[in-house]
Image (cartoon, protein in one colour):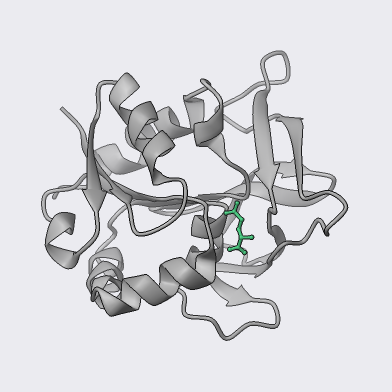
Length: 196
Ligand code: GLN
């Protein structure tokens, strides 16, 4: 049985845990470094990326997670989680995990469109006839990606799902619909390769 962690310091972690459990995976709330032991991978939820980053530092999770990621530990960041995985955050020096060679802009869709939904075609995950409904909430925009980054989906010309090795990021909230294909992809195509 697959045992996955969900970073549970702030933000929308509970829906991710429910989704994992509905898929018969074990979902562990991760709050401190020892919670990382024996996990097949980690999900980082949406929320407030500055707060999550600050709390990760405070609980010693930042260093512990970076060490594990350097060995290839699978991580899936959604929305604020994607921001935290980004190497570059436009106009921000906020604490981040990093590791994903992308440049991201926070709250990029502006105040008028704080939240919206869009049907997304995702390479190898959601074909044109059955797209995945993306729920974007004060979502970031990925402005640039290194050559090593695979863009699996885009919306209005900007990447919305990207992967680099064991790291996966989505700029929207895949835990807010009942469509679990992205979580399934993370478990089967990325986390399955990791030996805890
Ligand atoms: N606006 C948030 C941030 O910049 C991200 C929004 C979200 O996770 N839904 O951290």
